[in-house]
Image (cartoon, rainbow, N blue to C red; front, side, top):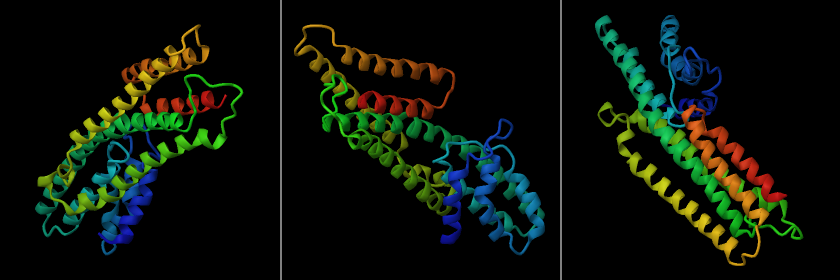
Length: 273
């Protein structure tokens, strides 16, 4: 795949969710992302484009970051379709393409949801909270006489945002190349990585951060215990609220992204007040 085509697919992948609909989900976004590649592949056979686009406009839905593995794999298979020398061979390759599209979208959705939504987003939120503590923003008990620089408040959120997006962008960019170069035997490059171990480690790191901050909060609250600390209770209630509401959103199948953004916003406001 030419670098220019890969770059166009990468840039367009940020608009994958554009045109999302309840009938065929990300089909419009997929077609938009793959259009530069399709135009290049069928530049000498423009009459084939309507039927090609019809295939891409069928149901497609997966995790937006991991979708890059679908783009590369579908592009590779599309080249095989374009080079088919007989009608029988053409139909075989189209059937294979449809099978790859369906199976790979399900696999990448499963990996992506568990890695990015279920592990990495909560982990980066915990990192933001930890950085606030290191900067002296003690959200367990803030002295109203101490003015906290606004830069400190947004520093942690910015770092967490950078970490999540740096990993996401890396996977987006490399996923296109890896899946295009890999074979079907390696599930188009997915088996090159131990995703389960990565997800497991991310969750365990997050658990360490969470337990550490809970213990710190308990210690901070109990070391000079004389009366009920309103600041501590407020922040404890907020933490427990987001923990409990996460179970509700999961049951209702509401994307954790919205809960994550709400948590970041609330903690930014509470810690600044």
